[in-house]
Image 1 (cartoon, rainbow, N blue to C red):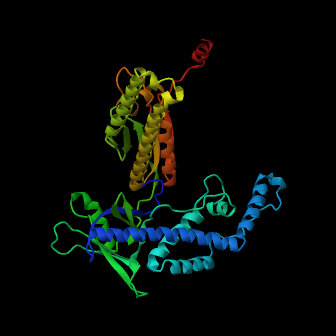
Image 2 (image 1 turned 30 degrees about the horizontal axis):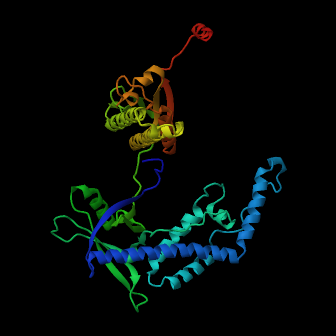
Image 3 (image 1 turned 90 degrees about the vertical axis):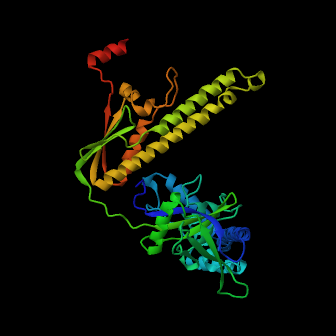
Length: 433
Protein backbone atom coordinates (compact mmCIF):
# COMPACT_ATOMS: atom_id res chain seq x y z
CA UNK A 1 0.00 0.00 0.00
CA UNK A 2 1.48 3.30 -1.03
CA UNK A 3 0.26 6.78 -1.67
CA UNK A 4 -2.40 5.41 -4.03
CA UNK A 5 -3.84 2.73 -1.78
CA UNK A 6 -7.27 2.88 -3.41
CA UNK A 7 -5.94 1.65 -6.76
CA UNK A 8 -5.67 -2.09 -7.36
CA UNK A 9 -4.47 -2.09 -10.98
CA UNK A 10 -1.15 -3.87 -11.53
CA UNK A 11 1.05 -4.79 -14.52
CA UNK A 12 3.29 -7.83 -14.99
CA UNK A 13 6.06 -7.78 -17.55
CA UNK A 14 6.49 -11.11 -19.36
CA UNK A 15 9.23 -11.72 -21.94
CA UNK A 16 8.17 -13.09 -25.33
CA UNK A 17 10.60 -15.87 -26.31
CA UNK A 18 9.10 -17.24 -29.51
CA UNK A 19 6.09 -17.83 -31.69
CA UNK A 20 3.89 -20.82 -32.52
CA UNK A 21 2.41 -19.23 -35.64
CA UNK A 22 3.09 -20.42 -39.17
CA UNK A 23 6.05 -18.07 -39.68
CA UNK A 24 9.41 -18.19 -37.89
CA UNK A 25 10.00 -15.97 -34.86
CA UNK A 26 12.26 -13.47 -36.70
CA UNK A 27 9.53 -13.00 -39.30
CA UNK A 28 6.87 -12.63 -36.62
CA UNK A 29 8.98 -9.96 -34.90
CA UNK A 30 9.10 -8.02 -38.16
CA UNK A 31 5.29 -8.25 -38.35
CA UNK A 32 4.95 -6.96 -34.80
CA UNK A 33 7.39 -4.13 -35.54
CA UNK A 34 5.32 -3.17 -38.59
CA UNK A 35 2.15 -3.14 -36.49
CA UNK A 36 3.91 -0.94 -33.90
CA UNK A 37 4.79 1.55 -36.63
CA UNK A 38 1.17 1.56 -37.81
CA UNK A 39 0.04 2.26 -34.22
CA UNK A 40 2.49 5.18 -34.17
CA UNK A 41 1.07 6.54 -37.42
CA UNK A 42 -2.53 6.08 -36.22
CA UNK A 43 -1.80 7.92 -32.96
CA UNK A 44 -0.14 10.81 -34.78
CA UNK A 45 -3.01 10.94 -37.27
CA UNK A 46 -5.49 11.07 -34.41
CA UNK A 47 -3.82 14.19 -33.00
CA UNK A 48 -3.71 15.77 -36.48
CA UNK A 49 -7.43 15.12 -37.11
CA UNK A 50 -8.27 16.39 -33.62
CA UNK A 51 -6.47 19.67 -34.27
CA UNK A 52 -7.98 19.96 -37.78
CA UNK A 53 -11.55 19.60 -36.52
CA UNK A 54 -11.03 22.15 -33.75
CA UNK A 55 -9.57 24.66 -36.21
CA UNK A 56 -12.38 24.01 -38.69
CA UNK A 57 -14.92 24.81 -35.95
CA UNK A 58 -13.06 27.97 -34.91
CA UNK A 59 -12.45 26.61 -31.41
CA UNK A 60 -8.87 27.86 -31.40
CA UNK A 61 -10.10 31.46 -31.50
CA UNK A 62 -12.72 30.79 -28.84
CA UNK A 63 -10.11 29.25 -26.54
CA UNK A 64 -7.73 32.18 -26.96
CA UNK A 65 -10.43 34.72 -26.15
CA UNK A 66 -11.63 32.73 -23.15
CA UNK A 67 -8.09 32.25 -21.78
CA UNK A 68 -7.37 35.99 -22.07
CA UNK A 69 -10.61 36.85 -20.24
CA UNK A 70 -10.07 34.14 -17.63
CA UNK A 71 -6.49 35.26 -16.93
CA UNK A 72 -7.66 38.84 -16.44
CA UNK A 73 -10.47 37.63 -14.14
CA UNK A 74 -8.02 35.65 -11.98
CA UNK A 75 -5.67 38.62 -11.62
CA UNK A 76 -8.52 40.93 -10.57
CA UNK A 77 -9.07 41.33 -6.80
CA UNK A 78 -11.95 39.21 -5.53
CA UNK A 79 -14.07 42.20 -4.51
CA UNK A 80 -13.85 43.68 -8.03
CA UNK A 81 -14.45 40.54 -10.13
CA UNK A 82 -17.28 40.69 -12.64
CA UNK A 83 -18.93 38.21 -12.81
CA UNK A 84 -18.38 36.91 -9.28
CA UNK A 85 -18.23 33.27 -10.41
CA UNK A 86 -15.61 31.98 -12.80
CA UNK A 87 -16.86 31.40 -16.36
CA UNK A 88 -16.36 27.84 -17.57
CA UNK A 89 -14.60 27.13 -20.86
CA UNK A 90 -17.19 26.91 -23.68
CA UNK A 91 -15.10 24.39 -25.67
CA UNK A 92 -14.96 20.66 -24.90
CA UNK A 93 -11.67 18.86 -25.54
CA UNK A 94 -13.25 16.01 -27.53
CA UNK A 95 -16.97 15.32 -27.64
CA UNK A 96 -18.69 12.16 -28.90
CA UNK A 97 -19.33 13.50 -32.41
CA UNK A 98 -15.68 14.49 -32.85
CA UNK A 99 -14.51 11.08 -31.59
CA UNK A 100 -16.74 9.25 -34.08
CA UNK A 101 -15.56 11.40 -37.00
CA UNK A 102 -11.86 10.91 -36.13
CA UNK A 103 -12.34 7.16 -35.74
CA UNK A 104 -14.06 6.93 -39.13
CA UNK A 105 -11.11 8.71 -40.75
CA UNK A 106 -8.60 6.42 -39.04
CA UNK A 107 -10.45 3.28 -40.15
CA UNK A 108 -10.10 4.47 -43.76
CA UNK A 109 -6.43 5.47 -43.42
CA UNK A 110 -5.38 2.37 -41.45
CA UNK A 111 -7.63 -0.32 -42.85
CA UNK A 112 -4.95 -3.02 -42.42
CA UNK A 113 -5.22 -2.83 -38.61
CA UNK A 114 -7.98 -4.40 -36.57
CA UNK A 115 -10.60 -2.20 -35.00
CA UNK A 116 -9.53 -2.98 -31.43
CA UNK A 117 -5.85 -1.91 -31.73
CA UNK A 118 -6.89 1.35 -33.41
CA UNK A 119 -9.60 2.00 -30.81
CA UNK A 120 -7.33 1.29 -27.83
CA UNK A 121 -4.46 3.38 -29.24
CA UNK A 122 -6.70 6.38 -29.92
CA UNK A 123 -8.38 6.12 -26.51
CA UNK A 124 -4.98 6.20 -24.87
CA UNK A 125 -3.92 9.19 -27.00
CA UNK A 126 -7.12 11.08 -26.19
CA UNK A 127 -6.78 10.45 -22.46
CA UNK A 128 -3.13 11.51 -22.47
CA UNK A 129 -3.90 14.70 -24.38
CA UNK A 130 -7.12 15.84 -22.73
CA UNK A 131 -6.34 14.90 -19.12
CA UNK A 132 -2.71 15.96 -18.81
CA UNK A 133 -1.58 19.36 -17.56
CA UNK A 134 0.63 21.74 -19.48
CA UNK A 135 4.34 22.00 -18.78
CA UNK A 136 4.48 25.70 -17.95
CA UNK A 137 0.87 26.69 -17.43
CA UNK A 138 -2.01 26.08 -15.06
CA UNK A 139 -4.32 25.44 -18.01
CA UNK A 140 -4.74 21.91 -19.43
CA UNK A 141 -2.46 20.81 -22.21
CA UNK A 142 -5.16 20.70 -24.89
CA UNK A 143 -6.02 24.37 -24.23
CA UNK A 144 -2.37 25.38 -24.61
CA UNK A 145 -2.24 23.55 -27.97
CA UNK A 146 -5.36 25.27 -29.31
CA UNK A 147 -4.04 28.62 -28.05
CA UNK A 148 -0.98 28.16 -30.28
CA UNK A 149 1.58 27.84 -27.47
CA UNK A 150 3.10 24.52 -28.54
CA UNK A 151 3.13 21.09 -26.83
CA UNK A 152 1.43 19.38 -29.79
CA UNK A 153 1.91 15.61 -29.32
CA UNK A 154 3.77 13.69 -32.02
CA UNK A 155 5.48 10.34 -31.61
CA UNK A 156 8.82 9.86 -33.35
CA UNK A 157 9.19 6.19 -32.34
CA UNK A 158 7.13 3.04 -32.66
CA UNK A 159 4.47 2.76 -29.98
CA UNK A 160 3.31 -0.22 -27.91
CA UNK A 161 0.76 -2.51 -29.55
CA UNK A 162 -2.43 -2.59 -27.45
CA UNK A 163 -4.65 -5.67 -27.02
CA UNK A 164 -7.70 -6.61 -24.98
CA UNK A 165 -10.09 -9.51 -24.42
CA UNK A 166 -11.79 -9.05 -27.80
CA UNK A 167 -8.57 -9.58 -29.78
CA UNK A 168 -6.47 -11.80 -27.51
CA UNK A 169 -6.62 -14.85 -25.26
CA UNK A 170 -4.33 -16.49 -22.75
CA UNK A 171 -3.59 -20.15 -23.51
CA UNK A 172 -2.98 -22.32 -20.45
CA UNK A 173 -0.03 -24.72 -20.26
CA UNK A 174 -0.73 -28.17 -21.62
CA UNK A 175 -1.16 -31.07 -19.19
CA UNK A 176 2.13 -32.65 -18.13
CA UNK A 177 4.25 -29.74 -19.25
CA UNK A 178 7.29 -29.40 -16.99
CA UNK A 179 7.99 -25.65 -17.21
CA UNK A 180 4.39 -24.37 -17.35
CA UNK A 181 4.87 -22.24 -20.44
CA UNK A 182 1.94 -19.95 -21.20
CA UNK A 183 0.99 -18.67 -24.64
CA UNK A 184 -0.61 -15.42 -25.70
CA UNK A 185 -2.64 -15.22 -28.89
CA UNK A 186 -3.23 -11.75 -30.31
CA UNK A 187 -5.13 -10.75 -33.43
CA UNK A 188 -3.97 -7.40 -34.77
CA UNK A 189 -4.15 -7.29 -38.58
CA UNK A 190 -7.04 -7.71 -41.01
CA UNK A 191 -7.01 -10.72 -43.30
CA UNK A 192 -6.68 -9.85 -46.96
CA UNK A 193 -10.13 -9.74 -48.52
CA UNK A 194 -11.94 -10.36 -45.22
CA UNK A 195 -13.33 -7.31 -43.45
CA UNK A 196 -14.12 -9.24 -40.26
CA UNK A 197 -11.25 -11.75 -40.08
CA UNK A 198 -8.02 -11.09 -38.18
CA UNK A 199 -4.63 -12.76 -38.49
CA UNK A 200 -3.71 -14.54 -35.20
CA UNK A 201 -0.19 -14.51 -33.76
CA UNK A 202 0.49 -17.04 -31.00
CA UNK A 203 3.39 -15.95 -28.79
CA UNK A 204 5.37 -18.03 -26.30
CA UNK A 205 5.78 -16.34 -22.91
CA UNK A 206 8.71 -16.87 -20.57
CA UNK A 207 6.91 -18.27 -17.54
CA UNK A 208 8.97 -21.33 -16.60
CA UNK A 209 11.44 -21.61 -13.75
CA UNK A 210 11.58 -20.47 -10.15
CA UNK A 211 12.11 -16.80 -11.00
CA UNK A 212 8.75 -16.59 -12.79
CA UNK A 213 6.61 -18.00 -9.97
CA UNK A 214 4.92 -14.65 -9.31
CA UNK A 215 4.13 -14.26 -13.02
CA UNK A 216 2.56 -17.73 -13.18
CA UNK A 217 0.51 -16.99 -10.07
CA UNK A 218 -0.85 -13.77 -11.61
CA UNK A 219 -1.67 -15.52 -14.91
CA UNK A 220 -3.56 -18.29 -13.11
CA UNK A 221 -5.58 -15.73 -11.16
CA UNK A 222 -6.44 -13.93 -14.41
CA UNK A 223 -7.35 -17.19 -16.16
CA UNK A 224 -9.65 -18.22 -13.29
CA UNK A 225 -11.35 -14.83 -13.34
CA UNK A 226 -10.35 -13.91 -9.79
CA UNK A 227 -8.42 -10.93 -11.18
CA UNK A 228 -9.89 -8.80 -13.93
CA UNK A 229 -7.93 -8.64 -17.19
CA UNK A 230 -7.43 -5.04 -18.42
CA UNK A 231 -6.14 -3.44 -21.61
CA UNK A 232 -2.49 -4.46 -22.10
CA UNK A 233 0.41 -3.84 -24.52
CA UNK A 234 3.12 -5.55 -26.50
CA UNK A 235 6.31 -3.50 -26.09
CA UNK A 236 9.66 -3.71 -27.87
CA UNK A 237 12.79 -2.77 -25.94
CA UNK A 238 16.26 -3.10 -27.52
CA UNK A 239 15.01 -5.65 -30.03
CA UNK A 240 13.28 -7.81 -27.40
CA UNK A 241 9.51 -8.08 -27.09
CA UNK A 242 7.57 -8.07 -23.82
CA UNK A 243 3.92 -8.45 -22.94
CA UNK A 244 2.81 -5.90 -20.35
CA UNK A 245 -0.27 -7.68 -19.02
CA UNK A 246 -2.49 -5.41 -16.96
CA UNK A 247 -4.97 -6.71 -14.40
CA UNK A 248 -7.11 -5.45 -11.53
CA UNK A 249 -7.10 -7.17 -8.17
CA UNK A 250 -10.13 -7.17 -5.88
CA UNK A 251 -9.80 -4.77 -2.99
CA UNK A 252 -8.63 -6.45 0.18
CA UNK A 253 -11.00 -6.42 3.15
CA UNK A 254 -9.08 -4.57 5.87
CA UNK A 255 -10.02 -4.19 9.52
CA UNK A 256 -11.40 -0.90 10.79
CA UNK A 257 -8.85 1.49 12.24
CA UNK A 258 -8.79 1.78 16.02
CA UNK A 259 -7.70 5.24 17.19
CA UNK A 260 -6.89 3.83 20.63
CA UNK A 261 -4.23 1.49 19.26
CA UNK A 262 -0.84 3.17 18.83
CA UNK A 263 2.40 2.16 17.13
CA UNK A 264 5.80 3.73 17.81
CA UNK A 265 8.66 4.29 15.38
CA UNK A 266 12.18 5.52 16.07
CA UNK A 267 15.63 5.42 14.51
CA UNK A 268 17.92 2.62 15.68
CA UNK A 269 21.60 2.71 16.49
CA UNK A 270 22.43 -0.71 14.99
CA UNK A 271 19.47 -1.06 12.64
CA UNK A 272 17.78 1.60 10.48
CA UNK A 273 14.33 1.62 12.09
CA UNK A 274 12.66 0.27 15.22
CA UNK A 275 8.90 -0.21 14.95
CA UNK A 276 6.84 -1.26 17.95
CA UNK A 277 3.30 -2.47 17.42
CA UNK A 278 1.07 -5.07 19.09
CA UNK A 279 3.50 -5.32 22.01
CA UNK A 280 6.43 -6.37 19.84
CA UNK A 281 9.45 -4.39 18.57
CA UNK A 282 10.48 -5.05 14.99
CA UNK A 283 14.23 -4.47 14.80
CA UNK A 284 14.83 -5.98 11.37
CA UNK A 285 12.22 -4.07 9.43
CA UNK A 286 15.06 -3.24 7.06
CA UNK A 287 18.64 -4.44 7.32
CA UNK A 288 20.24 -1.33 5.80
CA UNK A 289 22.91 -3.05 3.70
CA UNK A 290 21.92 -0.93 0.72
CA UNK A 291 22.50 2.27 2.73
CA UNK A 292 25.94 1.12 3.80
CA UNK A 293 26.91 0.16 0.25
CA UNK A 294 25.63 3.30 -1.53
CA UNK A 295 27.08 5.74 1.00
CA UNK A 296 30.50 4.09 1.02
CA UNK A 297 30.56 3.90 -2.76
CA UNK A 298 29.71 7.60 -3.16
CA UNK A 299 32.22 8.70 -0.52
CA UNK A 300 35.01 6.70 -2.17
CA UNK A 301 34.11 8.14 -5.57
CA UNK A 302 34.13 11.65 -4.17
CA UNK A 303 37.56 11.33 -2.56
CA UNK A 304 38.93 9.54 -5.63
CA UNK A 305 37.78 12.26 -8.02
CA UNK A 306 39.08 14.97 -5.70
CA UNK A 307 42.52 13.38 -5.53
CA UNK A 308 42.49 12.76 -9.29
CA UNK A 309 41.86 16.43 -10.00
CA UNK A 310 44.55 17.50 -7.54
CA UNK A 311 47.21 15.65 -9.53
CA UNK A 312 45.71 16.25 -12.98
CA UNK A 313 47.68 17.79 -15.80
CA UNK A 314 47.49 21.48 -16.61
CA UNK A 315 45.34 20.68 -19.67
CA UNK A 316 42.52 19.50 -17.38
CA UNK A 317 42.78 22.48 -15.04
CA UNK A 318 42.11 26.16 -15.45
CA UNK A 319 38.61 25.87 -16.94
CA UNK A 320 36.75 27.40 -14.03
CA UNK A 321 35.30 26.26 -10.75
CA UNK A 322 32.10 25.00 -12.40
CA UNK A 323 33.95 22.54 -14.61
CA UNK A 324 36.22 21.41 -11.79
CA UNK A 325 33.34 20.64 -9.41
CA UNK A 326 30.71 19.41 -11.90
CA UNK A 327 31.09 15.82 -10.68
CA UNK A 328 30.06 16.82 -7.14
CA UNK A 329 26.54 17.71 -8.23
CA UNK A 330 26.07 14.29 -9.81
CA UNK A 331 27.14 12.45 -6.65
CA UNK A 332 25.05 14.73 -4.44
CA UNK A 333 22.00 14.22 -6.63
CA UNK A 334 22.45 10.44 -6.58
CA UNK A 335 22.55 10.36 -2.78
CA UNK A 336 19.57 12.69 -2.54
CA UNK A 337 17.53 10.52 -4.92
CA UNK A 338 18.49 7.36 -3.04
CA UNK A 339 17.41 8.83 0.31
CA UNK A 340 14.11 10.05 -1.14
CA UNK A 341 13.32 6.64 -2.64
CA UNK A 342 14.31 4.80 0.54
CA UNK A 343 12.19 7.08 2.73
CA UNK A 344 9.18 6.74 0.46
CA UNK A 345 9.37 2.96 0.35
CA UNK A 346 9.78 2.71 4.12
CA UNK A 347 6.81 5.01 4.74
CA UNK A 348 4.62 2.96 2.39
CA UNK A 349 5.66 -0.29 4.10
CA UNK A 350 4.91 1.06 7.58
CA UNK A 351 1.52 2.41 6.48
CA UNK A 352 0.69 -0.97 4.97
CA UNK A 353 1.51 -2.78 8.23
CA UNK A 354 -0.50 -0.37 10.36
CA UNK A 355 -3.49 -0.47 8.01
CA UNK A 356 -3.48 -4.28 7.91
CA UNK A 357 -3.44 -4.45 11.75
CA UNK A 358 -6.10 -1.76 12.17
CA UNK A 359 -3.81 0.60 14.10
CA UNK A 360 -5.06 4.18 13.91
CA UNK A 361 -2.18 6.17 15.39
CA UNK A 362 1.59 6.32 14.85
CA UNK A 363 4.03 8.16 17.10
CA UNK A 364 7.27 9.05 15.29
CA UNK A 365 10.34 9.90 17.37
CA UNK A 366 12.41 12.15 15.13
CA UNK A 367 16.08 12.30 16.20
CA UNK A 368 17.77 15.66 16.62
CA UNK A 369 21.23 17.09 17.33
CA UNK A 370 23.77 14.67 18.84
CA UNK A 371 21.33 11.77 19.13
CA UNK A 372 20.57 12.11 15.41
CA UNK A 373 24.25 11.83 14.52
CA UNK A 374 24.60 8.54 16.43
CA UNK A 375 21.85 6.70 14.49
CA UNK A 376 22.43 3.95 11.95
CA UNK A 377 20.98 5.91 9.04
CA UNK A 378 23.44 8.74 9.67
CA UNK A 379 26.55 6.55 10.11
CA UNK A 380 26.20 3.35 8.08
CA UNK A 381 28.90 3.11 5.42
CA UNK A 382 30.92 6.13 6.54
CA UNK A 383 34.70 5.96 6.42
CA UNK A 384 36.38 6.72 9.78
CA UNK A 385 38.42 9.91 9.74
CA UNK A 386 36.68 11.28 6.68
CA UNK A 387 34.09 14.06 6.68
CA UNK A 388 31.37 13.83 4.03
CA UNK A 389 27.98 15.38 3.29
CA UNK A 390 25.89 12.19 3.13
CA UNK A 391 23.52 13.03 5.96
CA UNK A 392 20.03 11.62 6.29
CA UNK A 393 16.92 13.67 5.59
CA UNK A 394 14.85 12.96 8.71
CA UNK A 395 12.31 15.67 7.97
CA UNK A 396 11.63 14.13 4.58
CA UNK A 397 11.00 10.73 6.19
CA UNK A 398 8.56 12.32 8.62
CA UNK A 399 6.83 14.13 5.73
CA UNK A 400 6.43 10.89 3.77
CA UNK A 401 4.98 9.16 6.83
CA UNK A 402 2.57 12.00 7.52
CA UNK A 403 1.32 12.12 3.93
CA UNK A 404 0.89 8.40 3.32
CA UNK A 405 -0.58 7.68 6.74
CA UNK A 406 -3.01 10.55 6.35
CA UNK A 407 -4.20 9.10 3.03
CA UNK A 408 -4.84 5.82 4.84
CA UNK A 409 -6.66 7.44 7.75
CA UNK A 410 -3.83 7.00 10.28
CA UNK A 411 -2.97 9.83 12.67
CA UNK A 412 0.74 10.71 12.94
CA UNK A 413 2.29 12.44 15.95
CA UNK A 414 5.92 13.62 15.65
CA UNK A 415 8.09 14.07 18.72
CA UNK A 416 11.67 15.28 18.56
CA UNK A 417 14.18 13.33 20.64
CA UNK A 418 17.66 14.47 21.67
CA UNK A 419 17.05 18.14 21.00
CA UNK A 420 19.22 20.47 23.08
CA UNK A 421 17.28 22.48 25.62
CA UNK A 422 18.71 25.53 27.44
CA UNK A 423 17.48 27.11 30.62
CA UNK A 424 16.87 30.85 30.45
CA UNK A 425 20.07 31.63 32.37
CA UNK A 426 22.25 29.34 30.25
CA UNK A 427 20.67 30.62 27.05
CA UNK A 428 21.43 34.25 27.92
CA UNK A 429 25.03 33.33 28.78
CA UNK A 430 25.38 31.49 25.49
CA UNK A 431 24.05 34.48 23.56
CA UNK A 432 26.40 36.83 25.45
CA UNK A 433 29.39 34.68 24.49
